[in-house]
Length: 192
Image (cartoon, rainbow, N blue to C red):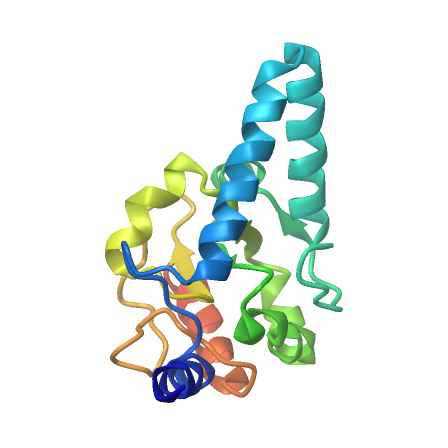
């Protein structure tokens, strides 16, 4: 029981972190269910797979997963990259999971009026880490914890100098770190 309490308090204090080969039973079961569903889709007709992929991308881009009520327009990674390149706007990538309590509580971060104003000039992208897109593997070197928020130039380069104030988790923002997130948005906009 002590280990569970220590783990819980760490997760609540610093967000949710997954280390290789240290996933909990519920995460292992969830991954098994996801793999099982992926196998079922693969076994079906290819048209069904593309329809399911399109629905998944629409769900991700629409923001229905984490229920963050805000006026921000969320895009998928591929849509966001295209828009950033076309418009010259920087890109903000929010990596989250539905099961992470810190991720679900990010709403106030995106509801702040100054954040919404600044985000009009930034391409906002959401990505559920549990969907395990291959392109996200490139950023695992920066940690597996969630939520993680990265900033990119319009050309697609990671702006690694834009970080949260938490040294141990440099891309971790909390619902209470609105001013730090605002400062990061401003810094990304200044590097256009």
